[in-house]
Length: 258
Image (tube, rainbow, N blue to C red; front, side, top):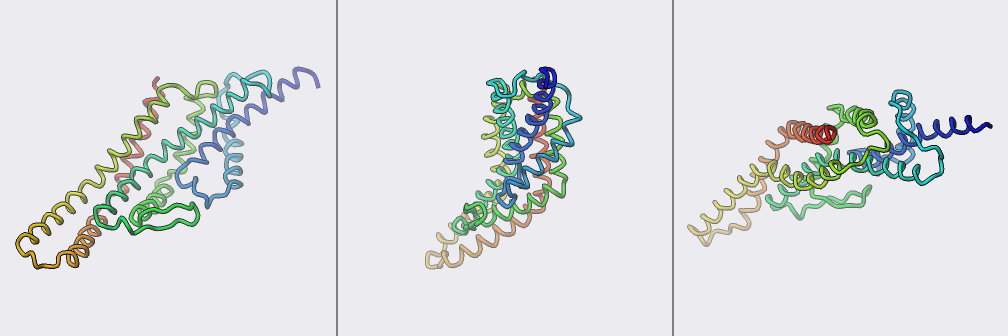
């Protein structure tokens, strides 16, 4: 093979390898798809399919002249980091809602009601797990999987290989850590206020009638009010999910303007 043919082959491989690495990294950390129930083979197959579809439509970008070189290795590492960062950005919506579920469980006295996940090998509160399952259903019913594909495709236009990672991208991820807690607190705040009133009422009853056994009465009543608040909150979770998703997309759009 001549030098021109070898160079053409290297460019063709890089045009497929770099998008494949970025797509696979994002799928590894994407909401719902990061669950261990989705095998690595299925993720690799999905990444290959998306690469085959997106590859011919991607705009041209500068490529290194040698396939096995330090420049190529840095480009591959950049694609992995981009996929991890944007996958974690999409995870923020689920993390915020699950954190709200943990706060609700603690306020209701259900912090000890833990559910073990044999697939992921982790334990979480029951309410948090219910909210996660509900959000996973919303993710597919509201075309969240199509949103991920759109972000992937536009990512190659706004952040092509070689220009994917910059300071605003890293700052957005750091600032989002505080945004998670703020969003979760706002979602759980109504239930927290109701439970505070209930506990204050029991404190007043204890002062009025010290002989009343408030422990046997307080826990069921607190749980009842807490479950009522959770039932009312569940009807608003789709709205919260959309608002949080739009907030994340606005953050990504703000990064694009730099």
